[in-house]
Each structure stands twice: as structure tokens, then as C-alpha cells.
Length: 497
Image (cartoon, rainbow, N blue to C red; front, side, top):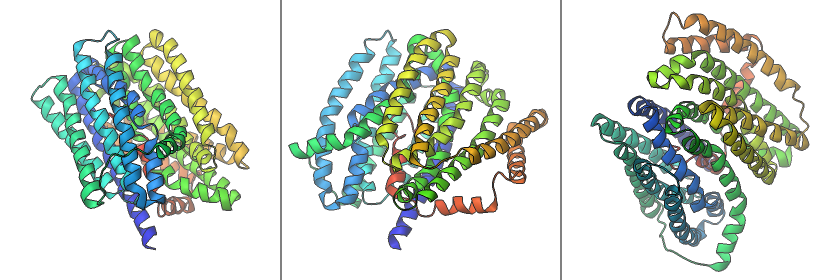
């Protein structure tokens, strides 16, 4: 019972911290956008996107390996951690050198290069911080990591707002992220050393090193493909169109990124249940998958319709300089539907030992994304990048849903019925927004629209009281290690600021 209580407590910490992270991060982004303008905002996020792509080559999937192995063999933690730190020191030197060389091959101004150099500090410190917290996760403890992530966000926002208030240049604004990374590194080291009583000592064991690389390889490949898919669009926009368009694109990207805490939190709890059902109760696995799809369909559609109808008001929050971001936002938000339902599809494949298929699907999507960006960005600029996001997420859905039918006895009929009901309710809500927004401000319109939508979907039978109870129950006994792994996949340089 104590272990179950600890798991529930860990997931509560993690979910609350994730929500607070997203709220603080998006609030700070709004201030950044208003104060920097599209071009400087583009330079800021180009630097972070550029180093974030390289950051994966410091880790190479070691994080998931470390958490799992420490959880299995806690008495071997010093040897495991020492071996991984030895490997990472070498990879850090090589990766840092690669970032410096590559950025100087491009025709960027000195300001952009300086921002990349500052981002390197964040890249390196965040990589080791994540390693320390991954070790702590192996002891089923997410409390310190959850607390630290929120403090990190508060530090970034506080120092960042001060830098903008004092009218300091962009180097200082990004430098606040480096300061917060220094805090995070020191805190994680202190927790590991003094709270967990783990001594750090660099070790080299040839056999263990080979084992680490062999087991981490599938995680590394998926992470590399995912990182390239997620951040190359900003890099391509900067190279092919200019930093101004990177700034416009970030308006849509940050909104999508902030909203992903909804499926992240849900699937972190869903994954262990799917793993159990795969071994013991396959009919129940089908039920769990269908319900997850239903819930995320119901949640995603009102967000999509609401954002499309209110896109001009949303963009106006960032000042008139971002008026060209309205259409890209409307296109990108449609992709949210596929982003949401791809979470349970991916969880199902992983839970049923189809990790390689997930990795292969991500490789295909990444290659298609690169091709589409190279074709569409020179023609349509930010809109081209947004179209790529929509098309590639749809492709990821097609590639995944084909395999769902090979794993479980699945008929999409039930999900399509719920989709039709949610679509009708969202359509009526959109009409309501059209009339509401001329009378009320955006916050009142949002609240009224939510009440209207969920009232309609309940009357249409899209969900019932039993469904609400099922969702609450699903969050009570999730697997804390998997929850941490799901969230850690998005915690890299620039992604949590």
C-alpha cells in the first residue's frame, strides 16, 4: 500500500508541476513576444532550436536506460551513473565542438552566433541535470524534480522580465535561461549527493559501456528522429526565409506545445494499464484504447474550433507585429487533433512491444517533414512550415493506426460516433463564439464556449458520468517511472523555458 501511495504522490507532483510549467512558460513567452518582436524572437528560438537538435547526441537514450536500471538494481547506482557520466563527458566535448563548427558554417550575424554559444551552456548543463534527476527517478522519487522544474521556470521568467525591463540586449535575455540552468544543475547535484546519498565517481567498464550503448540504441534513434522532426522546421525557416518568420512560427508552435500537457498527463497513466492488459486481458486493452481515443477527441475539437475562431484575438495579445501569424496558427491548430490521438496510438505500440515500429514511423515522418519543409518554406514561409506540421502529424496517425488493427481487435466505429457528436457540438460552439466575441472579451468568450460545448456533448451522449469516474480512477495508480519518462522526452534545452 505504501508503494502505491508513493506512486500516486509522485504522479500528483509530476502532473501539477507539468501544468504549472506550461502556464509559466507560456506567460513568459507572451512577454517575450510582446517585447522582442518577430525578428528578435526568431533569433532567440533559432538558437535554442539549433542546440536542442544537437543535445540528443550528448544523451543518446541514456536517460531511459538509467532510470530503468537503477529501479531494478539500486545497489548498482554508483557504477551505472559513473559509467554514463564518463561517456557523456566525451560526448559533451564532441557535441559542443560540432555546434560551434556548424553554426560558423552558416551566414548568420554575430548576435545569432553569440546566442547559440549561450545556448550551448544550457544544452550541457541541462543534459547533466536530466541525468541526475533520471537517477533519482530510479528510486521512485519525483518530488525534487517536480519542485525544481517549477522553480526553474520562475527563475527564467523573473530574470527575463528584469532584463527586458532594464532594456538589456538579447544576449542578456537568453542569458537568464543559462542562469536558471546553472541553478537546476547545482540543485540536482545537491539532491543526488546529500538527499539520496549517492557519490559521484567517473568509471569505465568496457563491458558495461557496450551494454549501455546496446540497450540505449532504440531510445536514441527515436529521440534523434523526434528531435529533428520537432526542431528542424525552425532552423529551416531561419535559413530559408529569415528569423522574422521563425518569430511568427513560434506563436503557433508554443500554443501547440503548451497544450500537450493534456495528452501527456493522460497517457502517462494509461501506459502501465495498457502494458498489463496486453499480458492479461486483451479485450480490456481494446476498451482502454477506445476510451482514450474518445476522451482526446472530445478534448481536442473544441480547442481547435475555438482557436480558429479566436485566432486574430489570440495573436493580438502579442501585439500587431504578429498579425501574419493568424493563418499559420489556424493551420497548425488543426494538427492538434492528430497530435492528441497519436499519444494513445504510440502508447499502445510501446506497451505491446512495438517500439521498433514506433521508431521506424518516426523516421518516415522525419524524412517527409524535411522534404516538405524544403519545398514549402521557400514558397509559403511560415504557412509552409505550418502545413508541414499538419500533414506530417496526419501521416504519423495513418502509420500508427494501421498497426493498431494488427495488435488489438479494433473497429473505429465507436470512435467515429463520438467524433461526429463532438464535431457537431464544436460546430455549434463555433457559431456561438462568432456572436459572443463581438460582445465579450476573449476570456469570457472562452469560458462561455467551454460551458456550451461540454453541455452539448453531454446532451448528445458523447460522454457519461461513468466516463468521468473512469478518468479520475485512471490517474490514481499510474506507473511513476513511465510517467517520468513520458515527461522527460520533452525536457530539453529551450523546451521548458
